[in-house]
Image (cartoon, rainbow, N blue to C red):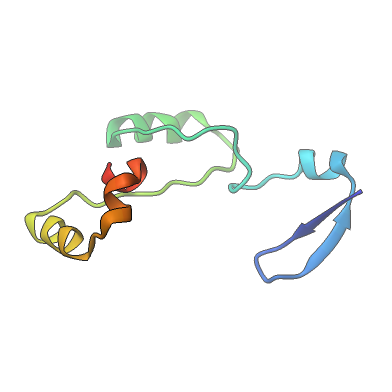
Length: 83
């Protein structure tokens, strides 16, 4: 048995086998970056599989200036934040 917490904060006990067979868009093995054409092709091919899509807005000069103004020393040492 393992303990899991849902999005509402409720804690439950369940078997590992049950968890492995559940469908969820938040249980994933990898992240894949795609352009809109690749996403359209993926949507046509997945049939009834559950997955999550996160869109990132295209950077603008205004958003870059705002990010630079809010940055501190730790920001420049974090590779993810720099990307």
